[in-house]
Length: 185
Length: 185
Image 1 (tube, rainbow over the protein chains, first blue to last red):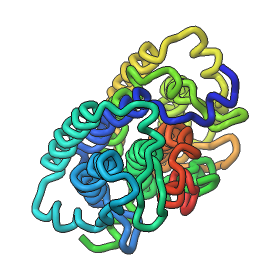
Image 2: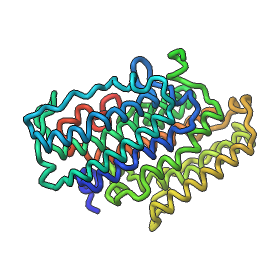
Image 3: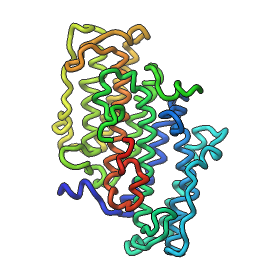
Image 4: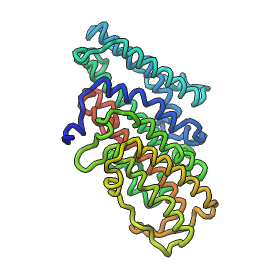
């Protein structure tokens, strides 16, 4: 395969949904049944724990991805997206167990992908534009690519939060561990 | 939980093996059945694809983690670890399918954890020292913590390789996506 086709891709709905469909099982495999010290771990200050991340992803299914796709298809640029509340999960997750959050995320993601399929988005639709509250004009294709990258960003975050708990414990090996050394982010 | 207990942890064998046991299923959930464009994607130049990463993890089970733990327990600092071949997977994986590599990694990891349990490592053993070919003195505890962080570093790599394929496709959202913006790596 030519090198350039292996480092950047245009959005392809089948390729994108193949990743989106796998995120709940990925996070379930990483987190379900892990000792609570890992689930509640964070990176200091106001950073999020794995528990917080799952609540954030639930919130995204409910208010961000498919709702914004519908706004683009129904209203185009005329109706600005609602702002996404990056802190709603702290209320949403209060008193919940991790397992129940994982179950809910999995159920909501399946519903999102059913809803997405029902929209019968064509290649031409991917260029349709909406209005982001901060960025202004964005396309449906950019929204869907962002959904994929956003999932993976949070998979990375969960793995990073856990790995960095051992920043001291790994001793001299920290130089070889990009997640701890921070090199090349 | 006090903040300091949520950002750094000492190695705890039960906590560590809980993470190690989940890595094969995590990568399986992410990768099995994904379109080949994602499996063969990389970050340019000599960087690795998800396919390459699984071969590297197989190599680690065969030559790195438990074999080095045994060297520490049997020989202490007297016998320097063998160097780890970071490129062996290119030969090892040639002509294989991703599914067969995922199956092999899962099988080898289960065997590694059985072997680790059979070593009946005590808390006192974690301070026993071996000799790393570059770092010199390292402890068994540091080796085992590194095994955990190394797994997660490669989970991160796989997610990052896939996400960065959409570095252009996400448009203005790249500013919000740490995996693409590279901020705070």
